[in-house]
Length: 138
Image 1 (tube, helix red, strand yellow):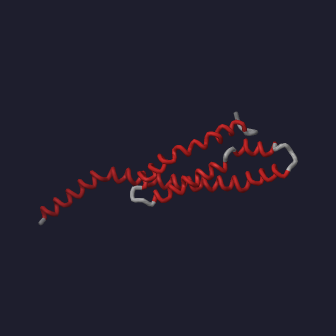
Image 2 (cartoon, helix red, strand yellow; image 1 turned 90 degrees about the horizontal axis):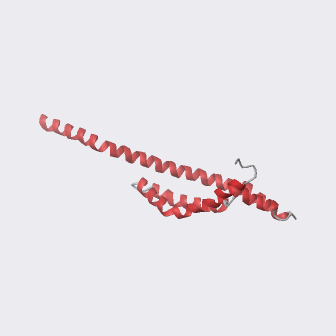
Image 3 (cartoon, one colour; image 1 turned 180 degrees about the vertical axis):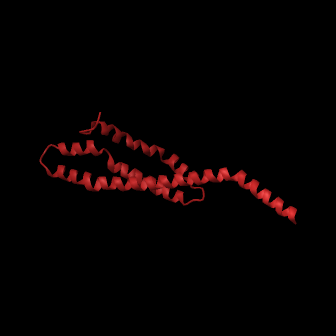
């Protein structure tokens, strides 16, 4: 009985040593996946604030003035395609959140990222417009 107990303890110790690095990697990947979702939530909230509190009032102000659309163009240069980015980010987040609930969140999140890569091209006009924005450091 003592030999069986000792064998069980040794096997248990060896199993923990063998699987511990894998478990640690899985836990780290899950933490990174959670952080990605949390960051995306904050980013969506910031974009929504940008659109609701700044872009819409500027567009309304530009549309009601009798000028030739100068302030509307300034808003476009300053904010780029912020509405499109908000839609893309919301779509990405709506795909990420269910993936995080799955058993292997890191793999599921990787699949969501891979499937949304073409949508990330919508950031090109925003980045290009950033250099044209007034007061932008060059």
